[in-house]
Amino acid sequence: MFESKDNESNFADQHQEPADAHEPRADYLSAAREAKRAGDKVLAMHLYMTAYEESCKRSPLPDMDAIGALREAWEVACDLRERSMAEYIFDKLEPHLTGDETERFARRLQDLALDKLSEFGISRADLEDMADLISEEIGAHAHISGITPIVSALYPESEDGAGEEQPEGQLDELEVQAQQGDQSDAVVEGEASSTESASADAPAASKARIVGVGKLKSAKGKDADTRTAPRRTMDFSDLVGFDGIIEDTRALGIGIKQDEAYRLLIDTLRAQHGLDKLSANGTVVYRTSSREDASVFMTAVVGELGLPAMRVQMQPGPQGMPVLCVTVSADRQPRLTGRMTLDAPGVLVLEDIDLWGAPLIEAASASDGEGIMFANMARAAREAITLISTAVANPDIYVLASMAGDAPDQGYLYDLMEPMHIVDIYLPDELERRAIWDCMALDHPSIRQLDLSRLTRLSRNLSRTDIATAAREAVEDAYRQGLKSRHYVPVTQEMMYEHISNFQPLDSDEYHQLEDAVVKEFRAQIERFEAEGGRLGADDAMGW
View 1: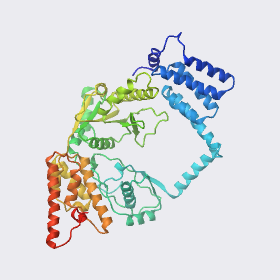
View 2: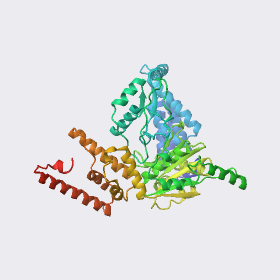
View 3: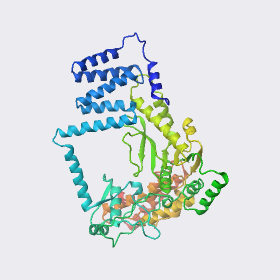
């Protein structure tokens, strides 16, 4: 799997029949050349494709003759301006191209698309003029203030209140968009007067999270041409309930760049040992029972390091097969080739590596007749292996990974990431859970009257993300009830119990306590209404 393409071709040749056997592929190649010499390019293109497909049926990997036929079909399709067929051939041919060839072929495919638009009366000059016009109009009246993923929609207010100010109206608009699932990510800020008026009318809602997020000050007294300060990423100062994990991570030299004592230690070690830096940083592996907590914490580590990051994770593909999904930070320009590369200095984040083993092995062990799809998967697996080994060996690249606490040994993946530094992310203890509930109460005034001590006890067995999600769902439930009844509906203790119980294991003591508390309160409501002589409806009894 991990050898060169020549070795792959040799592997494919081992599956070929003897040379004197009759090969339909050779007949198709000969017929394609004859059709091309006769001037019938359409027939030649399809015959070349048929020769390639016949070769794929005979071997899991096409040999050089089959790839040559595919290249011939590409040239003919481009000459005929058959954009759809050229795009289909490019998908088949791309795993066998070098980086320069891929870029050249992609540019040629783009030219075909532009030529297709010209058939409808849209020239390249028209497209350029339209793009320039749109850019000029946007720049004349507004500017893009930020592309806002849901994790970084809010940021805490700095202690001195300077350098991180954002218009309050813009903040509220982002929150409303996040709650309603708005498809738009870009927020365009208009004139200063309209921004200030929006801040007075927008509803004040805050986002449920496990990071400590404070209110942002409105940008008053600023000139209309003054842009807001650049938005910073989440770091350790934003996290709540991760105190122990932060200390373990700082013990590895991450997140203490402002520590003068640590700098002096580094200078002493360099002077005494005669080394500028270690040959490799290795891999920091976060082992946890909550993958969501690990993902949030690694995001904060990336923000703490302040370096460009690449995130790789295994996700189900459109055809049901697991594929490696690669995302990069905004300050990294994606390459046209789409190949996974990471320049130093940087951060490589590998999510849920315990889920990688089986799909990578399956991709590498494609059997006869499974076609070219597995060649693409095998190439991606090779690139992932190369990327990990290169990043681990580079002292200027930090490698972060996450895995489940009960994951089996992944063998060669673990060998690639050596030396590994294991940091365990346990479920939050009582102090950390109370800190999370205090943070949620700070953001949501409607839950401040609840018994937070009891909520802290009953939220045992929940991860930090589960606690934040349960609290947010309860607040949203009360919000919807208020809209329905046309008056303010507070968050009750029973509503919070109901949402916490959704995350508790069914056989836990906390689940039974929550169940008993909800039933007890339900009976108390019935007794109160009967004592008052009122008539209790089903919705009233459930607190709806």
